[in-house]
Amino acid sequence: MKTPTVLLIIENPFDLILYATALRDKGYETLISRSLSQGTELLETEDVSVVIVGQGTTAFEGRHVLERSLGLHPRVPVLVVARVLDKHCYLEAIELGASEYLEWPEPEDLTWAIDTQLLRAAAA
Image (cartoon, rainbow, N blue to C red; front, top):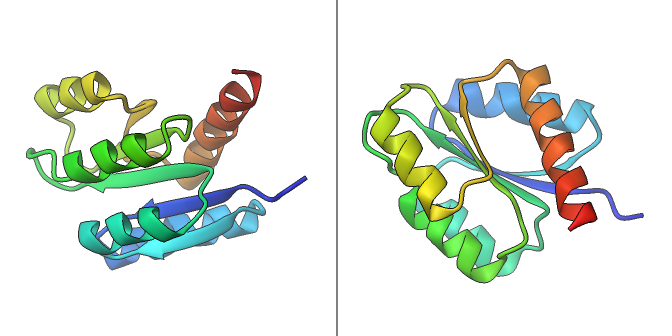
């Protein structure tokens, strides 16, 4: 069985390393992107199992990434991790098709959410 690949798109370098380390320790292949534009490019070229998009402000910056990901890979779950919880961003992300919207989870909680989404995707 192929190891799941997680595309992690988070602009804050500290958070990016924190989550990438936890994901790699859990055994996931992890692609990292420090920008939304680079993350979108990786969606075009890489075969991913899960996409994680960071949201650092009250504006939903990850909208384009979410739309592009679901357009290219409609069965791949997209999780939004929000540094700033905003109900409008939450509603927009879920309406666009995000699988999860989490308020900046602890690394182990994020890996649990990924495991859950991969199980759901496999059962579908």
